[in-house]
Structures are given as C-alpha cells and as structure tokens.
Image 1: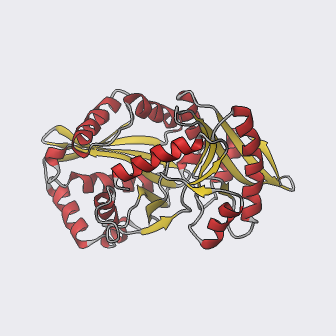
Image 2: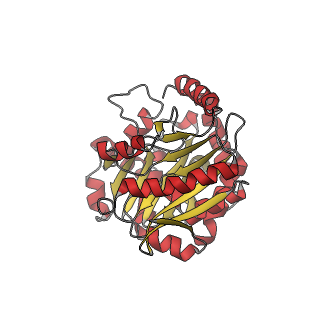
Image 3: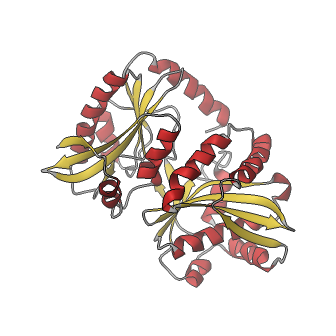
Length: 343
C-alpha cells in the first residue's frame, strides 16, 4: 500500500459516492471550507496495486494548547471487511507521522468513521493510539433510511411525533421556507445566539457558519430551512445534502416558542427535500443514549430525532497519537471541559 495526494475533485468525489460509511466531513467541499478558515489541508489517497481503496482528508488545527493534525470521520474505506483495516491505518499513519514532523504539531487526532467493534478498536491500540479526552466530531449518530415512500416513513414515526407533526401541518400560522441566501445566514445566527443564552455553550461564529454555507453552495449541497410562526422566523435548520445523504447539521429554535411544534415540520420538510434530491439516507448527526445518559446535553435532542424512526450508528471513539509532551496540556484542558459540559 502507498499514500498519494489527490488533487482532482472528480476522483475524490467519485470514490466516495459508493462508500457506505462516510459523512460530509470527508467531502471535497469540507476541505475547501477549512481552506477558507485559513487551515492547511491534505487530501490523501491510499492505494493498493494502483487502485484507490481509501481516502483521508487531513486538516492542521492550530491551538495555543497544542496544534494537531485532524482526520475528521476518516479514513473512508471503499468497502469494510474486504481490506486489511489495520494495514490501511498503518499506511496512513506513516504518512501522518512524517507530516506531523514537517508541520511541528503536538499530536495526531483521528475521529474514525469505523464501526465501534472490538476489531476496529484494537487496530488503533496496536498502533499506539489512545482515546481522546473529548471528541471533536460526533462519535455516534442517529440515522434513517429514507428510500421508502413518504407515507411509509410517516407511519414508522413514534405516535407522539406523528401527532405533533400533524398539529404543525394543520396550523395556518406555521410556514416552512427554504433559503440559500448569504444574508439569511445572519437570521439563523441570531436565533442560535438566543439558544446560547439559555443553554450556555460556545457557539460557532457567524463567519464560520457563513463560510460553511459558501463552501457547499456552488454545488447546491446546502440549504437553510426556516420555520415561521405568525410571520416571524422562530426556528432554523442547517442542512447539507451530499453523496446520497442528507445531514441535519445545525439547528436552533427561539426558546420562548419551544411549545410550538414547528421543529417537527421543519425536520420533515428537510427529510422530504433529501428524498427529492435522491438521497437514500438521512443523518440526524449527534446521538446520546437518553436512557443510559438522561442528563447528557444531547439526550433531549436525541429523543426528538428518534421519534422519526431509524437506528443508531456508533463509531470508534476519537483517537489521539501523542507526538510531543505539549499534548498533555491539551489533554488536561479537554478533560476539564468534558466534565464542565457534562459529557
């Protein structure tokens, strides 16, 4: 096996299209998004006998507590179970270690998109990785196959979800609109800020959200869905449609309207849009078991997502490879943050 950089968008995206375990965090446009943020990136392909069998988008993240190379939801392998996963990882790691020396980073972080099985976990352990104190991207997700007809998907929903969705559909004061306007990004951001005041978390900046929109807009892979109540925009959902999958990436609802079930209709319209675009899967993004961890910050949102039907997907937990002693500063800070956030 050998690693080569890939500079052709078509080669990259064509490889990812038939892959089953993937998210937009390995898309070509996510790489472009990080370039717009000022981050260095590398698009690496892993080849076996001149055939491309895996890809890994690598991003250099600079932080005062320790800089690192990040592989978000990767590497993506053409077909799990056929290739030697540990050999793929080892081949990639050899290149990442050389890159780490060149870029003078303190550690390598991989947020795998690999199923959380004993075999996959051992692959990382044998190569010297340790579980990260805090995940950088979701380590589990709630997903829904959307290949069935709309009426079938509706019938598969939880009874309460169907009821609230019908209530929103019947309410003449509720309207769902779709936008790809840069100016409307500020509307979503302002709603998000109101949520931040109540839930006390560090939000994405307006610049971050705007650049994410701009990265996916040229390929028509992104849209913002807004819910209006009596003419006022009270909720928004930030959706990405990529490589046959719809992603529910960001969402916000004005706290004072939390009893109005617009979020159910907003979500349903996004799912229907994904179907129109030919998507066969809908990824609700982060998941936290509401039974085992009822106090987890994501427990409530997870119950909401589960109401639409579907299944959970759990990935190998985020893995770190220590390069320098400065890593332990980052380890301490992230451990404290994890405790404070109740994760």
